[in-house]
Length: 259
Image 1 (cartoon, helix red, strand yellow):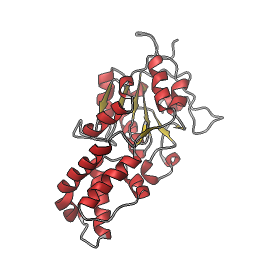
Image 2 (tube, helix red, strand yellow; image 1 turned 30 degrees about the vertical axis):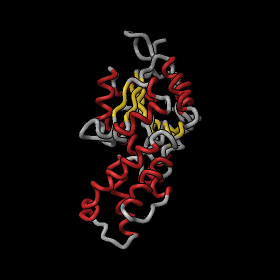
Image 3 (tube, helix red, strand yellow; image 1 turned 90 degrees about the vertical axis):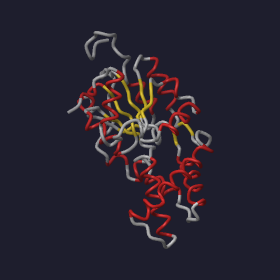
């Protein structure tokens, strides 16, 4: 049982009482947690498929695939489109066209990165509140750095976080715990006192394996599945709501829970 799980309020199942829990740091996912990027994925993938002479894939189908990194997204969408075009779409066929698809995807995304995305309500306010409470933050996403860094900056969120790790920052990505553990190490926080905020099973699995408590946003993607079916320490409607519950970070040397 994590420290956050122990703080669960019995009269509010599925929600957290964080008011007595001292967070040393907060890690945040990007797509589906801080920023709604579905329209940008849709445009970039449409650009990719159009350039390859393949039929489009619906936006709701894309939403169910998002979350496991750009390479997984491109491979999955390419396989769907090839199949609908009546062409071979097994792993070998997809791999044969993957490099071309990836280049077209990046080109398409580069044209709209940050332009169609919107910051989720309460996300920016939540970052401001956490910053004001002295709680350091970092973003850990499966999105490649070449797309994630401009997006975070364009939407005005970069100044509030210490750093960003992308899907290509390490050899391993979520749901592997490695990026979270490296983020904790860099922030100087213990995993048990580092709260992960995400929107999918990938975020929850990575946090569980790293030993971090995790809460999930109800508005995210989660591969098209109901978020409350995912094992987590709580489910929230805004990052601002989480931030306002957390107490200010204790001064250096204070014991957890001390004012």
